Length: 328
Ligand code: AVJ
Image (cartoon, rainbow, N blue to C red; front, side):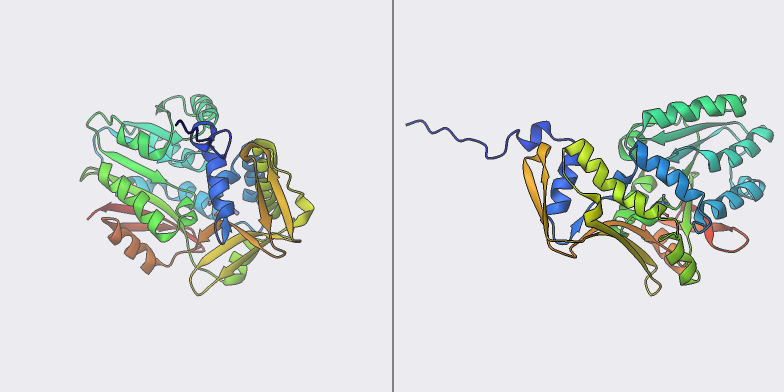
């Protein structure tokens, strides 16, 4: 007696699905619904993010740029390196801010190799080209892939490493995720290693609220682009006018939460998942956490991940810090 068992989903998810498809399927069947903010950054989303960084309300990029432009000498002097070292940057992106620090170090004839890591091969090629043009004396070794894999297979040539995690990207992680990532860095780090991480700080709540709900609606477009991306990459049939964008800052815990709101009860069909997702009227899709830290929270996070804060580098308004950590 032979029984043939047929898979109820075709194609089988384990074989055909992209990580994006899996995460969307899981995120939109969960209660409450959520999507990871890392999926904001397709080509269109990366262009919208460039526009966000130029908004009058969006202060973090300018604040960190000020730190790296005005204090590269202080940052360099705080490093214990008098011999060749590496600068390993997680999520380098366009590398515009880092260039200020690199420029200073090249001018000082510091002996180091810059190793930017990014998931996007295209971004790394562009960065390499741009650096070859503007800082021809700089030694660059680009690394393409997932942080975890690249860091665990990295050959630092026996040199001490300065790890950079700039831009306030740490703010997108929930507490456990942030500790996991920082411990992973701690595990690959030697005693003479250092970590420089960007944290957006608590400030007047109105300033933060407006940075994440700008008047021109660019942040709104950034969020709605997730629906466009699912339409294109997963064959979904989202109508963008059936969703609203909402974000709010809670000054009691420092969390900006962004979300999409379904404006009607509706079903959205995903062709490539062969599945529909039901939305109640006013149901939410959580899209992003952007956590704002106190200095006390930064100390605690360092301690929980095996580090101590050596020094904070602030902008003139104390909106942001690039926090230099060493192993505890
Ligand atoms: C790139 C993660 C630092 O959280 O401020 C900007 C992304 N989201 N506006 C941030 C973002 C909405 C940004 N980071």
